[in-house]
Image (cartoon, rainbow, N blue to C red):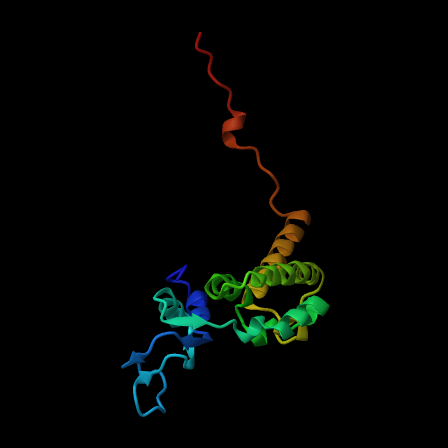
Length: 185
């Protein structure tokens, strides 16, 4: 919804969330194993995030807090956020959290995202600046997509800094600074 052409945004919004229908709906065909295309009021169904968001705006459903933001995950993040495998819970943990928080009305999701990011941020940058991890290492497999982008950016910045420090292109004086103005007299 935010970035129409971003493939990561499209994939993130395809993730399913649990909803409870507040109104009966007919002709929806959500469950292929169902004989009827009718959803009763109070039915609990898994829907893609983009559809759940649209239905929630029309007050047809109420969206439940996803399992990746449940109490168990919160306790694990509080205990040792650097070791929590957020990718297996939600590959786009931070983006999804920012989008789902206002929909479910849970203000604590924002604090969870902030505390997880703050504690994992230091670990990611430290490892990005000190050691090159192969793509299959344990550390690499627990990072979310946003954290992988951060790690790769930090590694690229460190490589550029080392190249510059070892004799890469130095500062150059702009050509306009070398010219003097002509006197008007």
